[in-house]
Each structure stands twice: as structure tokens, then as C-alpha cells.
Length: 423
Length: 166
Image (cartoon, rainbow over all chains, first blue to last red; front, top):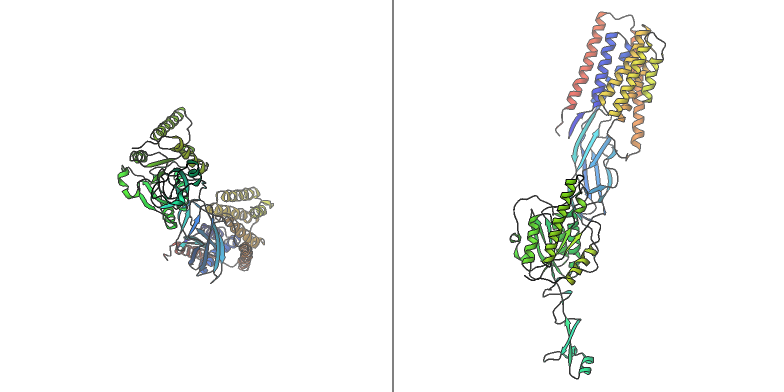
């Protein structure tokens, strides 16, 4: 706690001093009468002033909340001395917006305990530290000001809001375990695949009696089995394009969280590779626990400047299981990420690139030179996109405000018509 | 500003020999106060108060030796102007979560102004009672008392500005 004199105290002392000395110099008691209230005011104010200590206990309604939702912070305030004017400021990071005015101004009596409610809007995904309160109290005469901090820290995790996708992107090959996806190969399942002549060992229940009657010999149905698939979300955290409220990393995190939730709901196994200055990974797994692991890991994702060259060799092998679909979320701004994705394709991974468009975050420029540079930069990006497409990698630009459904459909359309190259 | 204008009007409106000087000082005091409020400067308020007090002092120089009966009201008004001015330049808070805080503060301000008027009246009455007595010894005693009072307040200020370290 710190204590300091206000400007008011200094002014009152000076006015009192000037008045009293002028009264003596001019021999006029009226001037002393004008100055005396200021001197007495300052003297009484300082004599009765007592140091105060404010205690604040902060609590949060939830430890986790979704982006865009409200979470309430409760402050319980007590003080050692009565305070006529107590300002409380709940220290909030960018991304948490108070719905009611912050700071709060209250009057606190001796021994009084006040409970204050402060609804906070979770504007931006991330992990926030909430509960630290900066307080400022003035004495009753406004001559001294006391300042300090109080409160306990609490962590609030704000999860990114989900995107709605009706049909998910499916990998070219499925895994061995049961799931919700119809496999391309044939085996025990429900989905009809084809007809073939009866062979020894076929079960009678598979006989297609209509085809058998038409052809005069037993024919059986072939089916596609239902299998699960492995999905690896590859998040590029080397670089991002950003303005104040939004950046390509935000788009990527929101997309990754949404896709993880949707794939895990379909009983698929999902893993995460956060590839950037700081490498972070989660091996593929299924279930709700894995969803929380992934989302918590995404909350820690941040752009960390690094000049170290990194390629796929730094990623543990088991993080990228064979026959997995790798969905890369990248603004394609860093050569290392671009090279790693090409390397993934060269190693035969089923890869789809969602390009987090940086165009809305980068102004075109005003001068001719700037506009020319901008056009060249866009041309280079077009060339890079063509390079991916020529390798059979579907690459779709995802712009701010476009639903993810459209992106997924575009990738599906590419995969329907493109000829897949195998390494 | 209204209170300051009211205070400034009193010496400026008097029909005295130095009326232009009083008027000039009164206008200067109000102008300085307006500037201080716009600039949110405590020092500016101090200059404005001195300006208003100086305008009042011109009245005595012109009027001669008899005591002014309005002094208690002027003293209370000067303190009211100072308190309201410092209230105006306090850091703005988005909302008053306690509505009774304003009422409580206004009531306290009224009490302080009433106390200032009483104190000024006591000083003036005391001066009137002692008028003609005095002499060099009493004047020297007054100088010492005034310097001592200011020094005492300064010492309290210095002690208060030191961080408590708690």
C-alpha cells in the first residue's frame, strides 16, 4: 500500500500560507480570515487521516467459458477503516470486457463487507488471469490518497466458439477400429458395396435372393465396413497476419477446436500438432478427454518468434500415424511451414490445406510501389497455391466471415475431381 | 464556475477607487479557474484562488481601515469554489455505483463551508476586539504564529507523502 498527498493538500497549504503572510504584510485580518479555513481544513484532515488497508476476495462463476459468453466475477470488499470514496479496478486482460463500469466506486463503512458483481464478456479465446484488483482510496477530506492491490488470482479459460459443419472431410483410408465412417474397402458392414458370386465360407444371410433368382446361381452382397479414421490437425504457429481484434491464428484455433469436436463426436481419433517457434503435439486419441486436451493445448498456442529452422524431423513419428488425414491450418506466411507441408505430402500423407487468408489483415498500400509489392506478394501466393494443387493437395482459402462449411465442401469437391498422386 | 463568478463579482462591483484593478484581478481569477478546470490542473486552481483572494484584498486597500462584514461569507465561498473545483478535476469514474455517495459528499461540503464561515467570523470578530491594542510585540508574535502554522502543515504534508511501506 502506498500513501501520497493530493494536489489539493499542496494547494490548500500554499493558499493558507500566502493568505496568512499577506494578512501580516498588509495588516488586514480579513485575509487571515480567508486563509484560516484552508489551514484548518488541511490540519484537521491530516490529523484525522488513518492509513487504510483494503482486502478483496475475488471469485469467478466458471473456470471455463465459451467465447462470446458471459462469466461473472464476484468481489468481496472489506477495509480496516471507513472509506468515503473507494475506487476498485478489476485488472482485466484484453479479450475480457466488463459489461458494467470498471472501475467501481463505492463507499465503505467501518467493518462493512460489500459484495460486488461484475459480469465479464469473453470476447476472445485464451487463458486469462482474473482476480487482481487495484484499489484507490481517499481520506474523507480528499487530502491523501492510498493505493494498493488486492485479490487472488484465478484462471479463466475461454474456449473458442464452434463452427457448424454438416459433413466432415473424410480421409482416403480408414483405420482398423470400428467407427462411423464407411470404409472404401469391403468387409463386414451395413453399407451395400457390390454383388459377387457365392463362394465357400459365405454366410447364407449375405445371399441376395433377387440376384440369385435372376441369374440362376447364388450371389451374395458385399458391404463396406464402418471404421474410424485418424485426423491430425496441423496448426501453423510460425507467423500470423493480425489486426487489433483478430488474426489468422484466431481463425486457425477456432477451426481446429471445431474440427476436433466434430471428428471426436464421430468416434474418430484426433491429434494435434502446433508447429511453430514452440512445438506442441498431442498424439491421436478419441473421447471427451482428448477434446479437452486439444482445446487446452490450443489455448496455449501463440506466435513465438523463432529463427531456428524446423522441419518434419522435429515432430515425433507417432504423432503422424499412417493413413491419417492431416488437415493443415496455415496462413502460409512462413517458409518453414510451407516446406513442412510439402514434405508431408511427399511422405504420402493424405493432406488438406486450409489457407487462413491473410488478405483482410494486410492493407494494399497507398503508393504505387506499395500496391505493386502487394500484387507481387499475391501472385507469389497464387503460385504457391498452384504448387500444392499440382501435387494433389487440396488447398482452400478461408476468409474471415466465410462459414467453415463452405471450406470443407470446397476441399471435398477438389478431392472428388482431383487425381491423387502417390509418393 | 458560477460560485467563482459570484465571488469575483463582489469586489469588482464595488464603487471604490481601485475598482479597475479589482475587476481585472477578479476576471483573471475566474479565467485561471476555467483554464485549470479544462487542464485539470490542481496548481491552476491554486492560482485562481489566489487571484480571487487578491481581488478581495484590493477592496481593503481602497476602503481603508474598517472591517468588512462580508468576509465570513467570502471565506466560505472561496472554500466552496476550491472544493467544487477539486471535485471537478477528480479522475472520472464511469458510473457511481453508490448514489448516496454524492448526497453524503454534498452534505459534508455544506458543513465544511458553514464551518469556514464560522471560523472566518471568529477571526474577524477577534480582530475587531483587538483593534487598536497590538503593538510591535503582538505583531511579531503574529508573524511567528503564521510561520509556525504554515511550517506545521508543511511538516504534516511531508510526513504524509512518505510511503507507509505496508
